[in-house]
Length: 630
Ligand code: 7RM
Image (cartoon, rainbow, N blue to C red; front, side):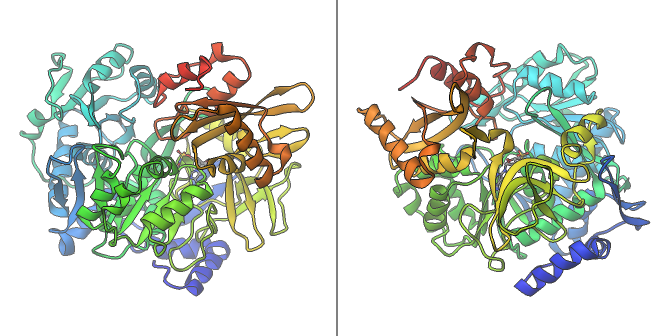
């Protein structure tokens, strides 16, 4: 399963394309199946129908936990690092995890949850979150984790869409110096959720909460009554494992459905290879389990490999911006995986916060979630990776289930800002404006994937038509990612951003990411986002929202400097017509800039922003609408 040489990568890549069934079958054979599959892969890219390891039966938690008990029962599976550094970390061994997951599985059964039922999980990053997810998988219930920063209306919409029978939540959660009253948010949501029969409540903040008789139950009260033994439910390869909502560019959130067998095989294989995971390593992904990155690369991928995975409850800047590096040294983290937005935020802070720590345990550092700009990449490589750790810029999506394009550390070459080369079995292609595949090596176009990989989403919950239309109709026969990319003459991919972010100015196609990169190189600038707005002559012109590291006196001079920088990096065509300095950019909870909102403001339609309650920082929107400039 391990790619340990460039030749092995090349041979695996070749076999993954030429003989995908043999290639994936050999990997699937590493896992425990109670019944082997009848066919490795059947698919129809036009109807968006996929099955992997059909007829096979397994339970992913047996592969995540039970399989390791013989050799690793006393090894730590999960390290829980609390929000406050004063609180001690919890080390959960594989044996403990087995007991806890079995108990939780029995608790779910005791409140009437059966195979196929949907369970909403609305928890902070505490051990109960990991345990609940795995317990659902163990009994065959479909988990739907909803990030604990979502509002009551966003929560209600997601609960109702998949008709969840219960909600697992907590009294509250800690994040930095704030605490969030999760239970009262659930109470408000449930006014509009007739499908929910019970609410199971974990205790974290020990705040006073209201408990509705018969409906609400403290987890500890059921857990104390049930056994810690449970025989995992055999699941068909194509039985749904989970639903995870992702926001579409328009309309209601899409409940992406992932199934059991293919997801298991793919997340395990990619975790091992992308992070060069070796037995005994300590791995840390800073994402929240409320996102796909947390599902695939905090829980399933690492546990399938018998790894030690850190779960961090807090935020990068609490109690100070050295927290990440403190945790890396504390647990001697070997692989560290985070998002460009976090890297940029920490790069803004004095280097003393980094240099207090040795960071010499690190072997591989990773990035995910958005294109990483050159400046952030270099900062990360130099100051965190000490110029020796490979940087894995991993490109993938909620829909893809696992990483599709990434360097393999110390094996395939890395280039700053490039996600580089596809993993074995993955066939990316670029499409031109006529919808044809770009055959030349060098080119730029829309990124599609030509053939299925095991962890491709199977459908949108309750709406297969929308699934087909969103991903499989723009380029018939291909999966359309919604991203643009360029390919260099070595065949390496650089993701340029969502294609809805492409702006055509005077007939020139401009990607927002390279312009933002250019701006971000300016020493005074923290972050920027470019959107288009209508222009009489050019069709569209560029509007830049720019946040500064610290406020400056002469904003006019800085605006000139920005345009000079853009002119020199990209060309005068990419100069901004308008620049607005703000104290922040509107972001999703996972740290992605919400360009849709900025676009509306730039177009003069600030009155029509839609629901902004799910943003990380809705207050920034007011500031920008009021003209900001600090
Ligand atoms: C894993 C995740 C998916 C979108 C995707 C891209 C962007 C993710 C990278 C990236 C450039 C990367 N899932 N994206 N990773 N862009 N380089 N390494 O983020 O469903 O939440 O988002 O994120 O636009 O389509 S997601």
